[in-house]
Length: 141
Image (cartoon, rainbow, N blue to C red; front, side):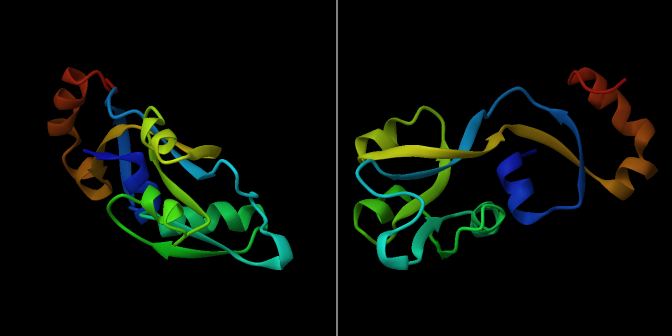
């Protein structure tokens, strides 16, 4: 079991036969409510702090926005509060922590939930053993 955030960040080559119905949150870009977003004045490249450097870099590259990604762990929102970063990419459930730190969601990147994952080879080789488990969990028959 893992979250879609981890699966997309790592690019894991696994099957996802079942969404488990819990762990719902969103991966978002957040910035101080008073800050210019996404472009900074004077052609300055924005710094984006995150636990998800690959997902963040891809999201900004798709939009053609150059950023410097700063990999952090822990309370990522503090990077924007302390001026270490201009924006953050982080998981949000209610948004309360962002609000408490003067940040606002400016873009949603990914809906996240818990997933059951299965190694591709194991799925093929042990399908008969896996099917009863998947059925009990509400997955494919």
